Image (cartoon, rainbow, N blue to C red; front, side, top):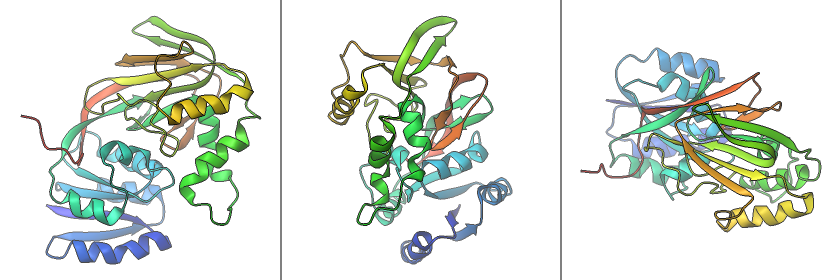
Length: 289
C-alpha cells in the first residue's frame, strides 16, 4: 500500500518534508504538493488503488479532503499542522507531527463515523451562536508578536464576546422538539474538542453511531467569561443552563451562519444525519476483540 502525504506550499510544510523522508525510508511513499483544495481533491479522487493518505493541516483541510474519502477503502492519518487541530486531539494526546507519523506506522485503521450536513460531511464539530462567530472570525485576528497561532481562538473570544448579539435556535430530532430559545452556544459534535482545544463534549465517541449536541442558554455578557472558565475546567455538565443530547439526526433552525470544522456555511435549513463507520482512520487504539 502506498503512503501519500497531502501537503501545501507553505514554509511549515516544506520544513516538515525532511521529517517525512527520514521516517518513511524503506516505505513506498509520495509527497504531494497542491496549490488549492480543489486540486488536492482532484488528486485524491484519481487514486484508484487503496492508499494511506496523510493529511497535513488543520480541521479545515481535513474537512475538505474527507469529502473525497467517505465510503472508500483509503486510510487516513491526521498530521496536526493547522490553527486548532481539534479533531486530532480526540485521536491522540501527541501533538508533534513527526511523533504522530512515527507512531501511526504501528497501527492499522478503525472505522470512524462522520456527520452529513445537507450537501457536505464533517468529522469534528458544527457550531452556532457565539462559538460560530468566534470560529468564523478566528483568522481575522491581528498577527500579535509572541502569540502563537494556537492562541488565535482565545484572542477571537476576547474580540467577539462583547459584540455578540443573541442568536436563537430550534432543534428537532425524529420530529420531536429538543430545544428552542436564545443561546450563546450550540454545537453538534462527532468528536470531543473544538475552538482550539476546548473539550466541549468529553463523552463524545467518534465510533458510537451517534452525534452529541451541547446547547448553553443565553446568559448576560458579563457572565460569558465565567462560562468559558467552566468549559475549560470541564464544569459545564450538570448546570441548568447547559443541555446535552445524543441523537442520530437533527434539524436545526437558525437564521445565522454555521461553522463546520473551521469553514463558514449558511443554509436555508440545517439537516444533520450521522453516517456511521464511513471512514478508515488511524485512531491510535488497538482494535477491540
